[in-house]
Image (tube, rainbow, N blue to C red; front, side, top):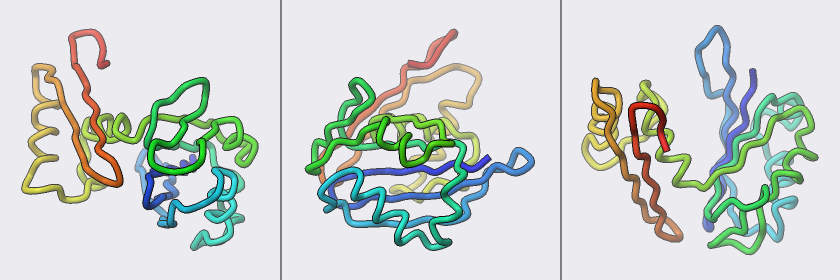
Length: 166
Protein backbone atom coordinates (compact mmCIF):
# COMPACT_ATOMS: atom_id res chain seq x y z
CA UNK A 1 0.00 0.00 0.00
CA UNK A 2 1.26 3.50 -0.88
CA UNK A 3 0.14 6.43 1.25
CA UNK A 4 0.69 10.05 0.30
CA UNK A 5 0.40 12.49 3.19
CA UNK A 6 0.23 16.27 3.20
CA UNK A 7 0.52 18.83 5.99
CA UNK A 8 -0.66 22.11 4.49
CA UNK A 9 0.03 25.29 6.43
CA UNK A 10 0.17 28.98 5.71
CA UNK A 11 3.93 29.07 5.20
CA UNK A 12 4.93 25.58 4.09
CA UNK A 13 3.26 22.53 2.60
CA UNK A 14 4.92 19.24 3.46
CA UNK A 15 4.32 16.03 1.52
CA UNK A 16 5.58 12.51 2.26
CA UNK A 17 5.13 9.18 0.55
CA UNK A 18 4.95 6.04 2.70
CA UNK A 19 4.76 2.41 1.74
CA UNK A 20 3.43 -0.41 3.87
CA UNK A 21 5.37 -3.57 3.20
CA UNK A 22 4.88 -6.59 5.43
CA UNK A 23 3.10 -4.50 8.04
CA UNK A 24 6.01 -2.05 8.34
CA UNK A 25 5.44 1.60 7.39
CA UNK A 26 8.41 3.14 5.55
CA UNK A 27 8.81 6.74 4.35
CA UNK A 28 10.25 6.66 0.83
CA UNK A 29 10.30 10.35 -0.12
CA UNK A 30 9.31 13.77 1.13
CA UNK A 31 9.02 17.29 -0.21
CA UNK A 32 8.48 20.73 1.30
CA UNK A 33 7.00 23.52 -0.83
CA UNK A 34 6.06 27.11 -0.13
CA UNK A 35 2.33 27.50 0.48
CA UNK A 36 2.11 30.58 -1.74
CA UNK A 37 0.22 28.73 -4.50
CA UNK A 38 -2.75 30.53 -6.04
CA UNK A 39 -5.01 27.49 -5.61
CA UNK A 40 -5.06 23.97 -4.20
CA UNK A 41 -4.85 22.64 -7.77
CA UNK A 42 -1.70 24.71 -8.37
CA UNK A 43 -0.17 23.32 -5.18
CA UNK A 44 -0.86 19.74 -6.31
CA UNK A 45 0.66 20.47 -9.74
CA UNK A 46 3.76 21.99 -8.12
CA UNK A 47 4.09 18.93 -5.91
CA UNK A 48 3.90 16.52 -8.86
CA UNK A 49 6.30 18.61 -10.95
CA UNK A 50 8.99 18.76 -8.23
CA UNK A 51 8.53 15.33 -6.60
CA UNK A 52 12.02 13.92 -5.83
CA UNK A 53 11.36 10.43 -7.26
CA UNK A 54 9.46 11.73 -10.29
CA UNK A 55 5.69 12.12 -10.62
CA UNK A 56 5.21 8.60 -12.01
CA UNK A 57 5.57 7.07 -8.51
CA UNK A 58 2.53 9.09 -7.37
CA UNK A 59 0.04 7.75 -9.92
CA UNK A 60 -0.83 4.59 -8.02
CA UNK A 61 -1.15 5.83 -4.43
CA UNK A 62 -3.82 3.97 -2.45
CA UNK A 63 -4.51 6.70 0.10
CA UNK A 64 -4.00 10.46 0.27
CA UNK A 65 -4.24 11.90 3.80
CA UNK A 66 -4.40 15.70 3.89
CA UNK A 67 -4.08 17.73 7.08
CA UNK A 68 -4.66 21.47 6.68
CA UNK A 69 -5.06 24.56 8.80
CA UNK A 70 -8.82 25.11 9.00
CA UNK A 71 -12.11 23.44 9.76
CA UNK A 72 -13.35 20.57 7.57
CA UNK A 73 -16.83 21.13 6.15
CA UNK A 74 -18.50 19.29 3.25
CA UNK A 75 -15.21 17.81 2.06
CA UNK A 76 -13.41 21.15 2.01
CA UNK A 77 -11.04 23.11 4.23
CA UNK A 78 -11.02 26.88 3.68
CA UNK A 79 -7.45 27.58 4.80
CA UNK A 80 -7.26 29.95 7.74
CA UNK A 81 -3.78 31.13 6.81
CA UNK A 82 -3.55 30.71 3.02
CA UNK A 83 -5.62 31.98 0.10
CA UNK A 84 -7.04 28.71 -1.21
CA UNK A 85 -9.56 26.01 -0.28
CA UNK A 86 -8.44 22.40 0.09
CA UNK A 87 -11.01 20.24 -1.70
CA UNK A 88 -11.29 16.45 -1.30
CA UNK A 89 -13.05 16.11 -4.67
CA UNK A 90 -10.19 17.90 -6.42
CA UNK A 91 -7.64 15.67 -4.63
CA UNK A 92 -9.65 12.59 -5.70
CA UNK A 93 -9.66 13.78 -9.30
CA UNK A 94 -5.87 14.27 -9.17
CA UNK A 95 -5.30 10.87 -7.51
CA UNK A 96 -8.14 8.67 -8.82
CA UNK A 97 -6.82 5.43 -7.31
CA UNK A 98 -6.52 6.94 -3.82
CA UNK A 99 -8.94 7.09 -0.95
CA UNK A 100 -8.76 10.75 0.15
CA UNK A 101 -9.08 11.84 3.77
CA UNK A 102 -9.18 15.46 4.97
CA UNK A 103 -8.62 16.57 8.55
CA UNK A 104 -7.59 19.61 10.51
CA UNK A 105 -3.80 19.78 10.92
CA UNK A 106 -3.90 19.68 14.71
CA UNK A 107 -6.39 16.84 14.71
CA UNK A 108 -3.74 14.94 12.74
CA UNK A 109 -1.11 15.89 15.33
CA UNK A 110 -3.29 14.62 18.17
CA UNK A 111 -3.97 11.29 16.44
CA UNK A 112 -0.24 11.00 15.67
CA UNK A 113 0.57 11.16 19.37
CA UNK A 114 -1.28 7.87 19.80
CA UNK A 115 1.25 6.03 17.61
CA UNK A 116 3.09 3.42 19.58
CA UNK A 117 6.19 3.85 17.42
CA UNK A 118 8.12 7.06 17.98
CA UNK A 119 10.34 6.67 14.91
CA UNK A 120 8.22 9.18 12.95
CA UNK A 121 8.21 11.80 15.70
CA UNK A 122 10.49 14.79 15.51
CA UNK A 123 11.97 15.78 18.86
CA UNK A 124 9.79 18.26 20.66
CA UNK A 125 11.03 20.23 23.66
CA UNK A 126 12.44 17.62 25.99
CA UNK A 127 10.59 14.33 26.00
CA UNK A 128 7.02 15.58 25.48
CA UNK A 129 6.19 12.89 22.92
CA UNK A 130 7.43 10.04 25.10
CA UNK A 131 5.40 11.41 28.01
CA UNK A 132 2.30 11.53 25.79
CA UNK A 133 2.95 7.99 24.56
CA UNK A 134 3.39 6.65 28.08
CA UNK A 135 0.16 8.31 29.14
CA UNK A 136 -1.88 7.19 26.17
CA UNK A 137 -0.55 3.64 25.98
CA UNK A 138 -0.81 2.89 29.68
CA UNK A 139 -3.41 0.69 31.31
CA UNK A 140 -5.83 3.56 31.90
CA UNK A 141 -7.06 5.82 29.08
CA UNK A 142 -6.00 9.43 29.37
CA UNK A 143 -6.84 12.66 27.60
CA UNK A 144 -4.33 14.52 25.48
CA UNK A 145 -4.03 18.14 24.34
CA UNK A 146 -1.80 19.28 21.46
CA UNK A 147 -0.91 22.96 21.03
CA UNK A 148 1.43 24.55 18.54
CA UNK A 149 2.42 27.82 16.98
CA UNK A 150 3.11 28.05 13.27
CA UNK A 151 1.75 30.66 10.91
CA UNK A 152 -1.25 30.52 13.25
CA UNK A 153 -1.93 28.91 16.62
CA UNK A 154 -3.35 25.41 16.47
CA UNK A 155 -4.88 23.19 19.12
CA UNK A 156 -6.56 19.81 19.35
CA UNK A 157 -7.43 17.30 22.01
CA UNK A 158 -8.31 13.66 22.31
CA UNK A 159 -10.61 12.59 25.10
CA UNK A 160 -10.06 8.91 25.72
CA UNK A 161 -12.73 6.70 27.19
CA UNK A 162 -13.41 3.06 27.80
CA UNK A 163 -15.32 2.65 24.54
CA UNK A 164 -13.95 5.22 22.09
CA UNK A 165 -11.55 8.08 21.44
CA UNK A 166 -13.11 11.40 20.51
